[in-house]
Length: 340
Image (cartoon, rainbow, N blue to C red; front, side):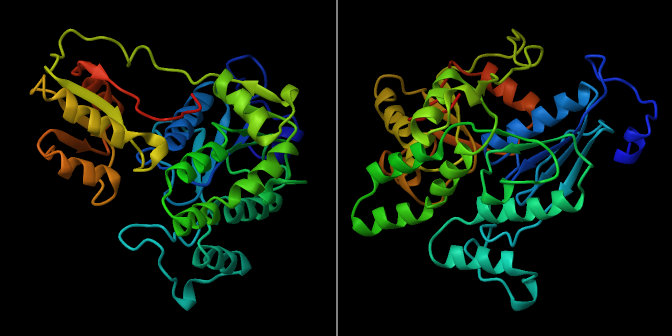
């Protein structure tokens, strides 16, 4: 239903709470649920809001969100970037005919100088898109973009989810960096966190996923305590439940990992597996994520001779993930820090 129809008082089915359904714009600058937790969050949140009777339009950039099918009130709008970090050619230089406007030029210039442009450039594109559609949405829900483009008038009230301050990721990577060149590179890459800190302090309302993350947002970002509200991440207990029909595999350890970075701690789990296998030779690790071709995890697997003891699986369905966890003796979260 259009904004004009709502103003005219056209009848519509109520939401689950009996009130008028909301038109929600859900923003995510990275939304693919197979390459990180924020994509999983967007996929499930958008589906459940639609199930409650609201109209949800997910607006995202590459890698684009993957939404559940079968919900007519749930739609995807693609807001393309230049996709500078895509595989198999990350950090690519776009062709001249790919440039559309000054935002594209800003995106490339930031990448060329070692920064990460996507939170800023997505926010600028989203601002332009939302202001052109003024009146189409009752609320804009931002999934941790925290870019300058979302300040001021964007055509609807704004609420933002901050899963945890990225300043924590920055500090952990700096602690692990060796040499001044690597430390400079980390500081430059995470330069966008200064923007996120400034933007978050100006937001009227912030959602987060845990009490510990709430405290980190207050301490690290300087957001006022009374502006941060905890909405815990839910779990589908009909799906994530024991099933005796799925046999337990002796020695199986299961974890998930979206990136080979110090924050995720996967390298430490691989090192621990090598020690465990000296007493329990059947111990093996299944990682839900992409196998790294190089980096600390790949080096540790080779160093300890674990090529046959560490398996990576990606792109699996929720049902397959649940059965994988059911088959494990141990499910492990090796992260040095997580907001949840």
